[in-house]
Image (cartoon, rainbow, N blue to C red; front, side, top):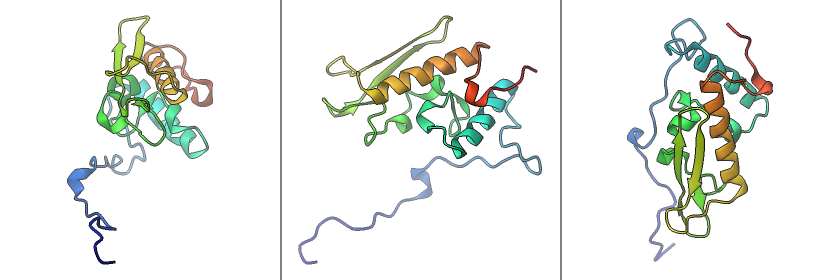
Length: 150
């Protein structure tokens, strides 16, 4: 169409996406190399639970960063404008996250412009971080994917 200035297709390079981490060869355990076996077990359990309907927004772990979700939630990759996760719709900017890992732990989400972060999506982020903190400190894993004590 004449005069159209925006391309219909955007070419991206591999550098635009995080490199996928392959599963350990022959083991079927993609988290076999993680020294924290509790974290590895919960990552695997949440992967399976997500395949069967668990909302990815309620995970206590992050399969991309391979860690507890509260440890990486401040990364730009976790800002989801379309759903409002880590996003202030009022100010149209990413919401900041402050996490205190010291028990009992505290999670605060706030917009750097207006100071607010009250949305259902951001409440999900806060709850996922609280669950993550609890699980990291040895608390119960959520019952949907509870793992047996080792």
